[in-house]
Image 1 (cartoon, rainbow, N blue to C red):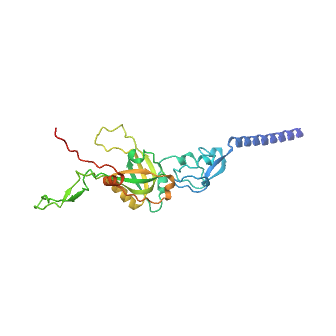
Image 2: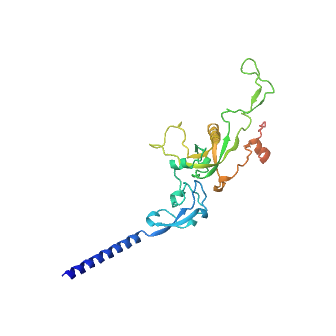
Image 3: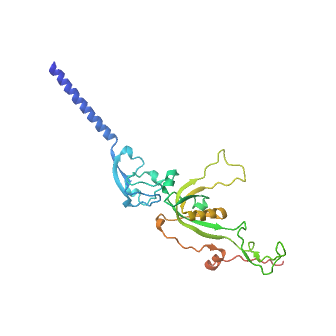
Length: 279
């Protein structure tokens, strides 16, 4: 009887070990290791990914959601969120989204963030995304005549008071005052926020301020912020999309464009007065 008991105990022990080993093997098989792509270096916002910036490691499949297995899948893509070294790269790192921590973390020392509300036309069809490099284009039409174009008054027309003559004659009604100029170059888009729908449907108030199609946050210097703000207040702002490889490109000296330059340098025909003929 004693021998039988010992034999049963040994058999039970062996069975427990076997079941435990089988359970462990089953658990291992249920979460196998897979190859995932990680950042070999810190990848800042807007980085154009190269093969040398990537590496592969193995991770349990449960920790590899939305990851990539082949570095070739990521070469040439632009990082839309800053990624730390050794972090597993996921689809979220290459998709747009507004995150306060990302915006603040992407600002370098001495830089500022400024919001620029834009239409689709002025925001390159609303395709700009965080990390993109852009130029800021200013267009001024002087429709309100706050900055009148004048010439010396040859006739000395009477002034409005005291019998004094006005030394200048306004030409606003006779010339095209539109001017276009790139005023800020090679700044980075920190965030791009789409227009939010109005609660309760579209407003019936015809005098309501039109909502922008896109509000873009740009990383700029304090001087650039002043230029952009002036352009917003007294002109029209547009963005021009640059190549991802332009991060360290030097500024380009542009002439700006007026009607006179279009006529003199590009051969555009100037407007000519039409003289009516007698019937």
